Length: 468
Image (tube, rainbow, N blue to C red; front, side, top):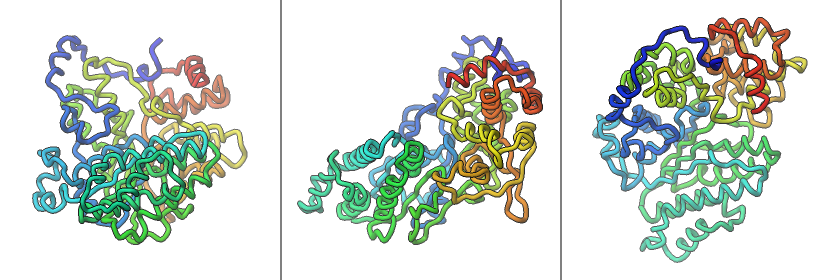
C-alpha cells in the first residue's frame, strides 16, 4: 500500500522517461540540500534564491544589534553566511555578481568587504550536561579564533594581545575567558584592521533550548547572558551585530540594557520576505527544474506561513521536493519537516488533551479541518515556560512554525491556523500514535482524510510513530 503522503493527491502527473529527464538536468544547477555556506553555493554550481535585499534592509535600519526570530529551516544560517561574505574584509565581490544587491553600486562600494567580521553559529550545541555544552561552545570560539590566527603575526598587536588570542585558541578556557571571548576578539580585530567589527551570531538560543531539555537551563542562561552582554553592550569595538534565533527570550535579561536593539519576528512587516520563499521564487524554481505542473502540490504542502504581510514557503521543504522530483516526477511526497529533527512541541501539544485546562478536542478539530482558533500570543516566552500552560503552548506553536496567523483581532489576539498539509500530517500522526485506533477522534481523522483525499493507513502510522 502506498504511503499516506502520496495517496491524497488526485492530479495525474506526466510520465517523462527518466533518461530524458537526466539529459535535461545535466546542465542544471544543483540543489543546495544541507548546504548553508553562501560562497559554496555561489561558486560550486548550486541554485540560489536571491535574498541579498536583506543586506540593503539591514543597512537601512542600521540598529546596533538586530535579532531575527524565525522557525527552523527558514534559511537563517544561509542568510547569515551571505551577510558575512558581503561585509568581511577581503571578500570576493564576484560572489554577488548578478544578484539584487549588485545593482546598488554605491552601497556595495561603501560597505562590501569593508569590515572585520566575527561569525559564529550555536546551532550545533547539543549536550546532555552543562560541562559538555560548555566544551562545545569553547570549540566554536576556538574555530573562529583559528580562522583569524594570522593575527598572531600582526605588527599592530603587541605581545599581550597575541597572548590573549592564543588563549582563545586553547581548549582549556576558564568561564570568564569564555564570556569575554567575543568581546576580546572584537578588540583584537579593531586593533589589527583599524576598523570596528561586525558580529554575526546564528541560532543564539539553541544552547538554551538544549539546556532546558537536559536540566541545566539556569547555568546556560548565565553563560549566554554574560557572553552576549560583554560583546553587545558598551563595546567600543562593535560596528553592529546581527543575531538569529527561534525565540526572543526577553524575560531572561539576555538583551537587557542593549542600546538601539531591535527584534524582527514573524509578526513584523519589515524583512517579511527575506526568510522563506515567496510564490514567485517557488514558481521560478519549479519552472527551472521542469516541475511547473507541480506548483499546486507544492503550495498545498509547504506554503501557508504568514510572516508580516508576506505568504512564504518553508525553503527546506521546497529545495528537497525539487531534489526528489527533478528526475522522478512521480516520487513519493515526503514530510521533510518531520524527518529532519524532533517534533517535541507537537507531541506536547497533542498529548496535553489528556490534561485539564489544556488543548480541547474541539480546538484540534477546528485546526485540522482548516479553520482557525483565536488566541493571545506572547512573543516574550522563555524555554522554561514552554509547556507550563495552554496559553504558552499556543505561543510556542506559533513562534516555531507549527501554526501561523490568518488575521488579528482589535485586542491583539491572532487567528491561528495550521499552515499546510505537511504540518497537518504531523498533528494527525501524533493523534493516531497517542490514541491508537483513533476512537473518539473520528471527526479529526475524517477532516484530515478529506483534506488528503484517501484514508490513513492507521496501523502503519501508529507503528512508525511509536518506533520514533
